[in-house]
Image 1 (tube, helix red, strand yellow):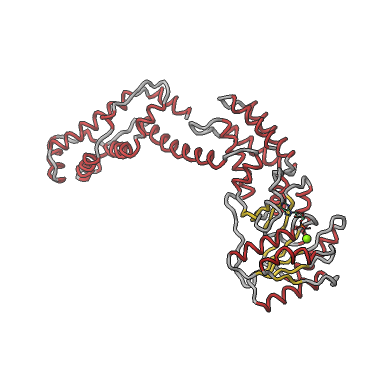
Image 2 (image 1 turned 90 degrees about the horizontal axis):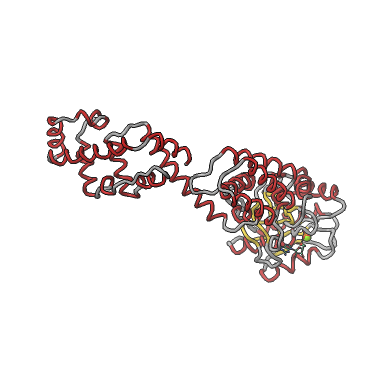
Length: 436
Ligand code: GDP
Ligand code: MG
């Protein structure tokens, strides 16, 4: 997927304007890429429809390239499915019973050992139940994996009744007072309907707090239907995707999420007991798209968007031609912090207007004096400073404990700034503002 998508996005990178035909082409490429990556076809169509709509209708913030903008939209649509943040596995009740399901070879047994160790490291006492009556040696496989960590496994290689084993195992660990009981199950390739029925019965027998679907990250399009089949047997509470240590992009896992509506909580990244990681949607999407630092890109876009909101508000105010003392104060205050006004004016290309620094920047002490003076003004005076005549100046100076000279200075600054805004070519400004 990574390669295909990257080439699609490179097309966008080469063009500086967002052209409708190009967006459509890129969206088609994304579509193809997601399908190649084993994301369910219907899901891909839904996703790409939304991506296309948004890419065509939403304008990228200033400073964000069309390519970055489309990546962001793709990311947002994917995380709508996956969730923006990881959902942790919660152990609320004692004991919390977890049931793992999934087809044979998906990595259930390995994952259970990893999960047991993960929980043990966090201070939980864990008991494991093997109900796999199908695979010879299933019990020993699990036992061997956790033996070095003194995690107990309940099972009976001679027993053929998986439901009985599940029930007895849970009772056994309840008596032992463990915090978490994890039940391992069998998975059979050919007899899927039989497997599903067994899951259903085990689930009804032990009433787990959470059923965890273990999905092999390397499987293709079947992931969607597999997940659906398990969901019919028992409500899926969460997903663990295994084998993401290789080159698999995990598109199948995305389909499983869509099929079950359950969040991915962990991913398996190797055969060893510590090769289990909490799921990170951002990293997963980066991987799915074959892109590098998506986190950095998202942060950049967010930052630019914030700036832009600020700018739009300011530009609008200028355009309305309204600029009173309160506006001036807000501008001076903002300017003191970060100089946005000057930035705004400078960012409007072709405006040919450069603001003299001293006209818009005042010191902290002066700003404080302005505040004091303005506190003695009436609302009417703040809104419409033109009415401030000499007798009002005297009153304001007295009320604020300042001097008439200082009040006049404030008014002079106001008039200077207002004149500057008046002189701006508003039509040009409006045209440029639209381009933001
Ligand atoms: P089960 O049949 O679902 O219980 O699957 P197993 O736990 O027996 O795993 C099947 C195979 O997948 C074993 O060889 C595991 O070592 C391997 N496996 C499981 N999880 C991972 C993983 O995250 N990465 C890799 N590389 N191999 C894994
Ligand atoms: Mg197994």
